[in-house]
Length: 144
Image (cartoon, rainbow, N blue to C red; front, side):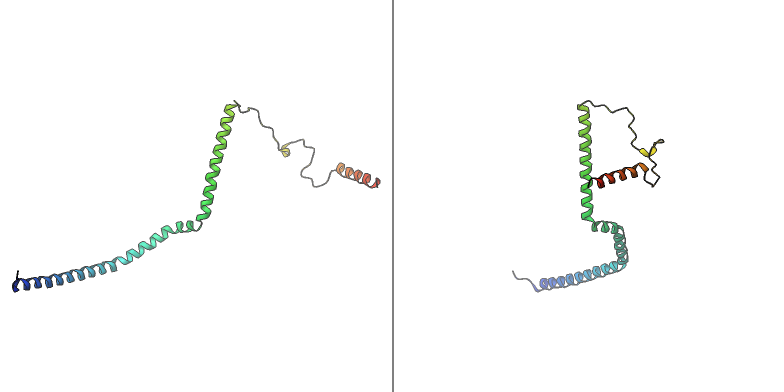
């Protein structure tokens, strides 16, 4: 099939027209994209600055990631062991039917006692202590 020169000319005109329109369209879109990028670049820069300010505390935490991982593991382990000990003690006291005592615990604080025989505020030695030391020193010297 022989094509006529009119069809060939028409196809070449269409290809040139399509090429020109494609180039014009691509240059127009490139120009609009460049203009939009130029207008939006301050907003993009402000967005980057705000994002870096917001994420700064997380960046600081990332510096201590290993330490925080260790501390978190220690806390979780301590809580698990403490809970296990509490549950074991509670179940053991229920198993042995142990009841909590209603008695008042004894005070072990000696400084609250009003009739204390020792003066805690005094910096001096008691005379009986000095005499006992002297007696012990004579015994050790006389037995030589």
